[in-house]
Length: 118
Image (cartoon, rainbow, N blue to C red):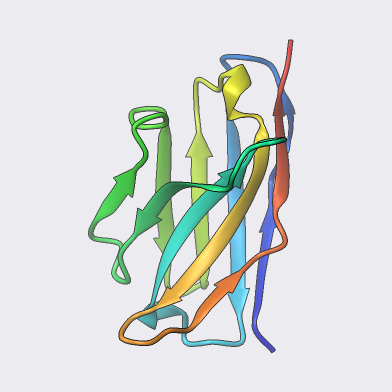
């Protein structure tokens, strides 16, 4: 059974930090590109960051570049999103997504809520 389980969300003040985690199971993790998305209330889901299968390349949305860092651990089948200097506009549900290399397989987690408020 394929599972992506996010954790680490919560309430944080502006300027604070959070570290999101995503635990993967049920598929061959190291063959999948991993991405983070987020969806704020009343808005469409948007891509936040992505990492290649070996972790060698990471890309970020302009809105988070320099503040967020994505990483993966293929041995533990985990991906992480370190979020620093959080802003009010970072408030959203954050989702982990797996995209299979050379296939149409893709999987989503259930999301974790991040709320930035003073």
